[in-house]
Length: 456
Image (cartoon, rainbow, N blue to C red; front, side):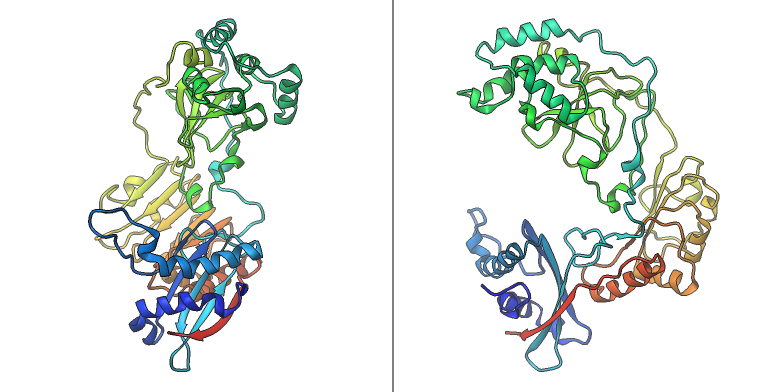
């Protein structure tokens, strides 16, 4: 089959794109762009709705699926997860120029866009919430409801055909994890080892235990690395655990031992690093859609399995100045209102007043992230006064001002360019990104292949 860098692989998609965007691709500077991966794609083609009264079928958009399918197969052949592209008119009539943009080690992948994702300005740097470890909680202890003997006895009564893990299997799991299994979790696996082949009806242990129990070989530690938080999301979060929290609101913890799933992708874990209002060995749920935090399920495994408690406990609402502040026409009305010594993240969004000054946040010791919407800053060069910034996200025009003035902060760990999905040509954004990368001595984005093919 044609390779990823053979124009024949792309020709069916080029024809569809030109038919859908003929006016754009005939205008000076006109372009269309997209991203294709082995698990999905973002390509600007019109969607053909299904006929009234029936569900959508692949055949409704068969040409698109066939054209992109050729590229997906070529990606798999090359062992690549994805590629971005830009299509422009070529100098010859009836031709288009195709730019293929390979992933770069200096850039995190963009999310459903051809534009470069977060620029990585320091080797191995991680967003602050990802770096955060659990705080010690003096006096933390198991809940009064934790009862290993009752848990073991109840499981044996309710699951008389269960096969338990051997001492050798338990010891191997502890050696692999690097921790001793807490007593309740060990008792659970002594009775039920979690293999589906042990059951005629695999739902039976789920109904008794309250979750889909993992085999011992699949139990893992849900530390921060297990959550794979991208910079553009992690930098906009903050870890905040108050005295009222049973669970520390971390990205992950070396004390979160995942042993099951709720059937919808959310992980169930025993928590050995509880919050101030929690218990050692409590059961928590780690959502698969969030980047930070977890919720309380039950005060103990006994509480969950024996007493069928799954809803945790209410959390008292405590008003505090926000660590993450959103200043925009629908939220906080000014920078002054957002400013306080604990502020970590400032996002300035859609604004219908005069551009703002950053002066109220110049001396804040914990302000590490700034994101600003186009035209909201009275003087982008004021950013140089924010000496603790780790992450900065700005539109192209504001980055241009900083670069021309030599005012890009020197301590950044990562940076984002907030480009308009269709209006801003990804090739121009890559050129801007390379200027920023050069300031930090990082490798430029270089993996761009240019091909030319027929427009129709």
